[in-house]
Length: 281
Image (cartoon, rainbow, N blue to C red):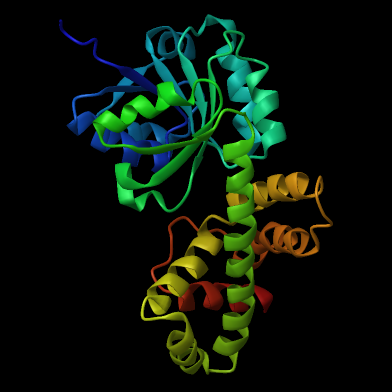
């Protein structure tokens, strides 16, 4: 018996969608996205990746077995609402949003075939990047492991995967904000390389590359980070007073004004600090 070829649709087409699509296509999976309402950058990225292109969301919804939502946090609910009742497959929310936002998004998917998913690490590792999933249909999503994905089902309840993602984000983005603050001061004092050397002794040989990546990514993705931290604060408020996470959120909210426009990701953190200092003059 010939197995039916699975059809995956991506809602949103940025770094996550393009990276996963490229490797899934290489493994014979049919991958598509929708051009409707997307930025010029997303359109060009989709075309260069080689995925199937639909002019309307309706076409994408009608032809997909699995829809993966990978949009900015502010669009997680609205994109689910646009999908609506015409979808018969499995809807996977992979956005960096709180369990409350995930559950709100799922109210707009009437068939109930929903999966709470979370990407646990940088997508640069492609299909090997760990993804956790929870919910009644998480096992359906995990069937994509046969195509090289690294999906772990952690529980039967919606909110478990996104909750863990929020906790990880609180830590990683909090560290990034603290790192930015400390290294900016060190850079102005002209002792940043010395600070980097001493921290490498305690943090390990990977620290210089990791620190540079955190600092440049914080600046380049600051608006998205701010939205993600707003979700973290909303989530943590249910359990504690998120003093540090709230400050981290405020840091990322203010960063775009400090750096000014950043059309491409800087290669070195010094470029970021020079822009910040120039804009303060």
